[in-house]
Image (cartoon, rainbow, N blue to C red):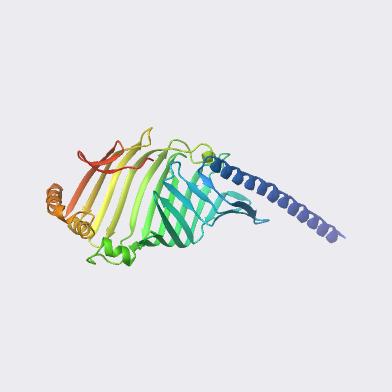
Length: 333
């Protein structure tokens, strides 16, 4: 009798626990779905997003959210993204740890061009701090066999793209790191950037690190109160492709008009090879090449190494300048 009573008690306890857990999932799924639909509707009303439908599955242990036909765009319409779907996964007992999975094919809009983004696998893990506003603690995006293709042909390819972010002292500051392995271009584009075939098939590992300082934490209120970038500190980048080696350092601030101000130092080792590539691809007109090369030789002589060209650049008033000379316009941040 005692064993039967214990068994009945165990069965009742298990049934009650299962019922409570199922109830928790249904209540939690309601708020997850309601929150996602509310955030998307808010973005849609502001003209910053669009979508087809939102659905939720995963009972009883996960919240699996699927957004069909998502689309995001910048306020000025110059940047945009769209995909057939986006999936977000979370364990129901750890909803602040998310996994995002993208489809193999997506679209990016940059100015007047729409680029095709393809990947064999593209996913991200996002960890939010366990507080009421759920500020971003750290995140990692990992893409394998990634390509970016223009409509008229020409593609950038990479074996792997890894982007990581973590809080840097406060919830409003994030240290970011970008690593690209096996960067290459397709034959059509290589004929343009490297007509003489001087570069190897793939570039060295490319790296970029910086601290992004925002005006507020990156938390769940971003859909109603977007954060503004205030500074980019401790910039450090390296890119090498065959004999050409480029290094980047600097610090920037972003003013109230969303314009960047600051200094960037670019160091180019074996700069003559880079110069020949620029002339061969038509970036530098051949008729101006002798005068420009002589100017660069004079600048390189100041570095103490004739094969190293150092360019101190100034960013202000929406322009990148080398000394008093404007080089290119800057987008707003």
